[in-house]
Image 1 (cartoon, rainbow, N blue to C red):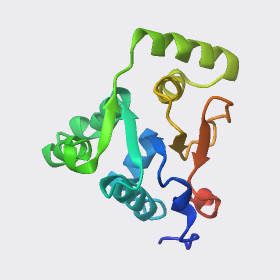
Image 2 (spheres, rainbow, N blue to C red; image 1 turned 90 degrees about the vertical axis):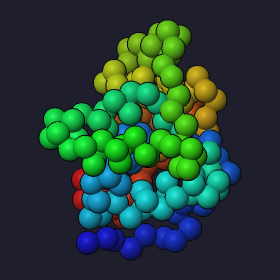
Image 3 (tube, rainbow, N blue to C red; image 1 turned 180 degrees about the horizontal axis):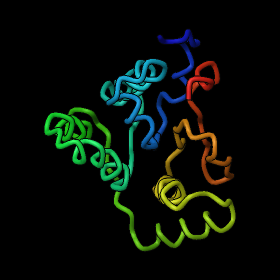
Image 4 (cartoon, rainbow, N blue to C red; image 1 turned 135 degrees about the horizontal axis):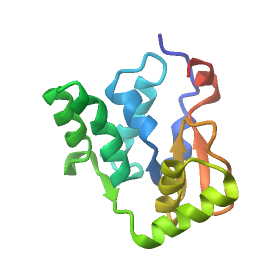
Length: 156
């Protein structure tokens, strides 16, 4: 069951260059009862060009694991479609310099390597916001970390 959130919550993303963490897509693709609708709304904002949406190649790989493990061709297609031209969400590559920055972030912030790689990709590409629901992602001076609405946080 969806929880009520402020209708203007998403406006802080409008006009911004936003990196979507994997959990945003997972909630959307799996129709999460508490987060699915808000994540759909956020992705729709990218489709409607109200924000510039980005993610990394690693997110694409992370999203494909479960459908491939379950041999679910329909879900594999849904993941691939998530990053089509229609969605306006661009997948960014992870360069050698990105991995070096990720190692630095991991060493200084004690975060997992995939999270550090996502953060480094967003920072290296000069994005405005890192959108996640991972409460272990630290705040950083290099990028604004935005969590899904606190009203929903108990559902994780």
